[in-house]
Figure 1 (cartoon, rainbow over the protein chains, first blue to last red):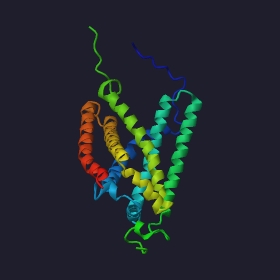
Figure 2: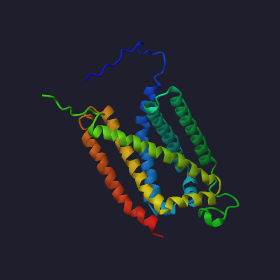
Figure 3: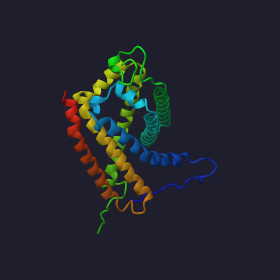
Figure 4: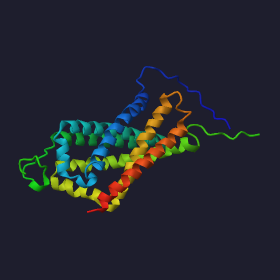
Length: 146
Length: 125
């Protein structure tokens, strides 16, 4: 059985930016970066020290009191959400047969992506590691309330 | 005599199944990511709110699921490197099958190393 590929009725023009190509490239550029970001995230949070047992508010406060981890987690947030959403878009394009369904799903995906990027970015930059009025035993050792 | 096709990169055998696994692991990680951004955002609500929710990550059921999550992330990341090698390395297609087994081996070994350590923390007190 041979596969017949339809002759395109219109050759590709170079008038518009090739967004599919940029998407394809983004996956391959963000991928290796995410490996470094996420594998380190897993080692620091789940392997070193007491791993998952040690994770609480004070642990997060200890990390985000340091601009290094703020930037690290910010990069992870943006890259992972865009990489994941673009991957989901690819899957939707493969399986959603109807144009309306496809549009509704991809619009929802990008809306959720934008919302979570906004939320996460605000959380990282407006985070107070030593919130006033919080009970001292829940706070990190460097807080004045301690 | 009919020639039995050996399968192409994305049709049949390892090439196809790695593609299937890449999709499934990707979708799983995506939905975890949505939840994980939301649960982390609770640090902005109050220390109590965050601690209550993060405690659920230390329960036996979720603790076991985390092994699957770590495995999915390792597989997806390493197989992604394999995909990049197939796309950009001249010998990528020749070694795609061997690279798949390297990905599987590294994933299994890393998860096997992580499992006793993690479960001791989840099931210990």
